[in-house]
Amino acid sequence: MSSSKNDAPSDEPQTKAYSIYTAPEKWFIVGLTGFAAMFSPLTANIYFPAIPTIAAVFHKSIELINLTVTVYMIVQGISPMFWGTMSDRWGRRPMFIGCMVVLCGACVGLALVPTDAYWLLMVLRCLQAAGSASTIALGAGAIADIAAPAHRGSFFGIWNIGPMVGPCVGPVLGGVLADKLGWRSIFWFLVISSGVCGLVIVTLLPETLRALVGDGSVSPPRFYMPLIPVIGKAQHAPDHSSRGNRRGFANPLLLFLYPDVTIILLFNALVYAEFYAVTATISTLFQPTYPFLNETETGLCFLAIGGGMMMGGVSNGELLDWDYQRVKRKVLRKLEQDPENKVKPEDVTKDEHFPIEVARLRMMPAMFAIYVAACIGYGWCLEAGVNIAGPLILQIIIGWTSMSMMNSAQTLIIDLAPSHGSAITACNNLVRCSFGAVAVSVIDPILKHLGTGWTYVLLSGICIVFSPSYYVLMHYGPKWRVQRRARRQATQGSKA
Image (cartoon, rainbow, N blue to C red):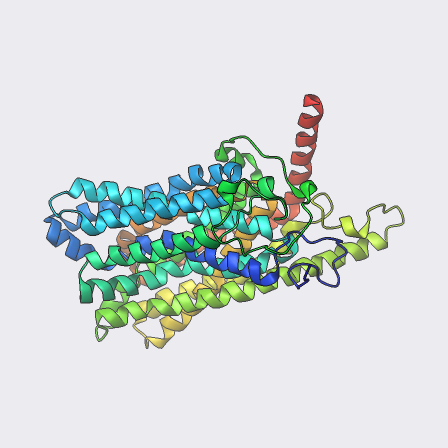
């Protein structure tokens, strides 16, 4: 088996890799699932520039057309709870295919919807959300399947570019398509792109659920095989010991009973809400502040925050993996100095010995401080009407730091519940979408009453109040994991 930095680095005492896939194969899976995950925010944001036109052709008010955005966000938050939970039971590949079929079909309907059927527009937007939103949870589950904790950060860093860049490039694409080809072209574009993604998934994406295929060496049922099984094609002896227990259906909301999971999800949602308050108001704040911008140039302003997010995803992923190794070496040194230590070096990264919270959150306070400073500065730059370069540079910093924090949070929650990778990501999506929807609904009234500068002071202040969550997690997180493990072992013992 070929080795790579993603399989067995020189300082890893492990004797076998976490999965059989080579580094290029892992990156292909990450890239394809990241592309699929992009459709969740893309289908939401590409629609925004066409809202005035759609309101006119449907002979409805802007407020009624905005309801199609509201119902989209509601379904976007709820549907992954079902798709994600099913994927933890039945596999990633069937759910990916199902999502792409629903999304593509809904987009065909939206491209052809009669302009006298407002009710059908609402229904199809709900179906569109049901198909697109769950791809984030499914992709996160696939990464948990193929990537060991020591290298999970870099994989999530690259993968997160898909779902986080969607809000930035969506308005640009939507504006150009609606302006040049008409509002229906937006949905035809989504039909083609989601159809291509679905075909590649059907053709090449292998099943990764460890309860079915273990480290990838165990052949799944024929239904789970890609049409062209070139990923993981190298011959390996089936390792049935790498397969986890195939779980029955579990209520994903029970994951909120984990105090560490709940804390990180809530704080991550607050950061996301302020980030969404920045992106959702770029057009409305930039056009009156810089009246020389036309619609296309305003749309291009979204690329600043998108570029920052791309840089943050890549750099933070590498930083997470570096921090993991740093904490590991520190734990090893501590154990070597303990004369009563009985832990083997190869067992040091097991759940009961390793402070995963410290490894994932060590740099978060610094990132958070830069993030809130950039958000506050961004608000006051727009309030003062400084040169447009000022807020655009701050957008890059906001994108960089917000992506870094959300990537760290996403990686940590997968570490805390790796066998529920999709379900716990669905919980993350539910909380983030809920907070994001609230932020979008209240940001305009707050801007009118407080002004741009004080609005972002208020939003940043709310985040600052809850920022001690990081230290609570790093201090109490390991204790909570010990308690969960003890309860789980007691339950298993009583059943035996």
